[in-house]
Length: 250
Figure 1 (spheres, rainbow, N blue to C red):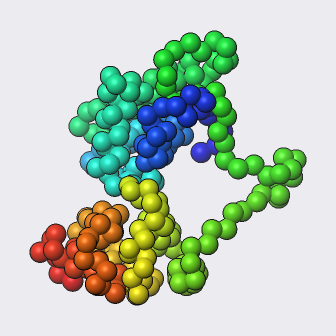
Figure 2: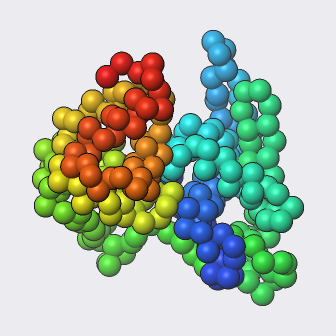
């Protein structure tokens, strides 16, 4: 998705900014919002329909949001409803049995007007330009700077072995802080045997088949008082999954 949107400096003082998971979901909402009127083709069962999306609106799907944000769907749903509540008054939601359309409240006011013309209550959504990283020389498209993130010796090596598998990378990011807790899962990371890429593929297969949240399992492992007595992340993870879903065949 090309282009940019504006984020107001008042975001720094907002309730949303105080919670990094909420802030991530809110920025995602702004980035998803259409900047112009357009029509989206949507599959409904065996048929197909066309949905009109106005500026400041986007189609919302919980499972798609979970995939893009790498945040548990229930957490996303909770914050989306908070954003729509009178307390926050940030979005409006129109839903039917097939899909939901989310509208960013005051989109035109915040995205199209100058800062001097904005006079409204606190709302984290405008003015300061937020864009993707730009090359240092804007006249040379080949000068893009790529940021290399290093986790630790083990996971850097496994990521390389996985050919940077996107799902495995998401798993590693959860361990190192991209989760609902907003912190690295230190207790899990201290365990002697971490999750190799082949082991992860088995976990991912189970996740796809039985529809559990990897983030949720890892976070509960992190908060488990007896975790220090366990040495293998993979086996401990399977124990938690089996405990919650006795019908799962491992």
